[in-house]
Length: 398
Image (cartoon, rainbow, N blue to C red; front, top):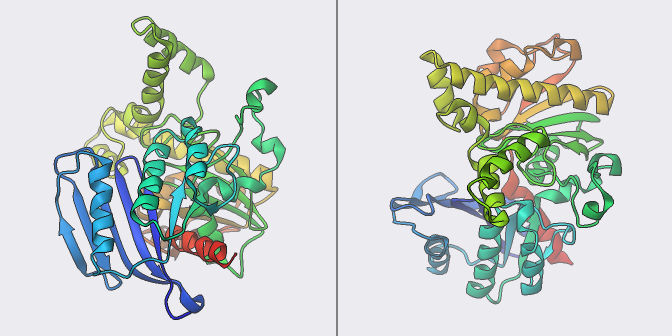
């Protein structure tokens, strides 16, 4: 097979990221990557780079709708300036209880996944839209869905099962997790020496942590939706259900329609909470670090809440794993914010975790633990697109 270009589409609530890989003869060579960002605004960005990092497209278009945004991507890929893909891989956070395996996309499959939009409300709507558009605009090319939840399918029932009445469990309410493609990419990059007892912290605007034993997920912080687990940029993370009931009753005082009230509660829990809600300033860790330098107490509290919560999860996962061989930081904050890494690990000496301050003063891939640390601590950027390509190639071979 002389050429096997694979297109990867990774959509977010306000962006579409994409890349093209050459995947023939066992090689995985990134040819191009790009993004459309700022969907829903009058001044977005659209860029495409080649493998050397040279910008081939650099625009600032109005992006009023996701249709306009995806049309830019499709038109560029159809222009002849880029290799025509032979297959397309789509990242999907959750396919719900009935779609748990990576597989070829059909219109019927999209309809089934769309039933469970509530399981990833910030991601599923644009993901299913792009899948439908890709089937329409690339009618002769096979499309495949690659699920974040796929990596977490190995969790035991005791970790997956929620403490709720069985009638709701039978509706599919359980722990699914997210960021699974990122976690799978860390395991892939650690081969062939994957530690038996591994914790990976994916820290970004969305943050989660997973306990991995023998290369398989044992437990993960996010639950039914990405709102659970660790405090994130705009999400609550785990919280006393009574808090949500209190807020819902307050909302219901002025919003008697139950659906509208639930939508407002979802906005509070998923878009107005987390680092943004506590700091009342920003969901961006860089902004919060700058504010801390000026003495902003709310920014300090937000960041402390973030790092304190992650340290607690690490401790609980060490108990589940019955020890720890390696801790890996990944994601935008995990890779680039050395202060967060230091603050998370500061109180974990009893678990055998000791950072080297000099080694930790780095952005990107590195070993940051001290020589006397019983647990190796590493920073490894995720390689999600590569994992999606691997799955697409495997599914194509079938």
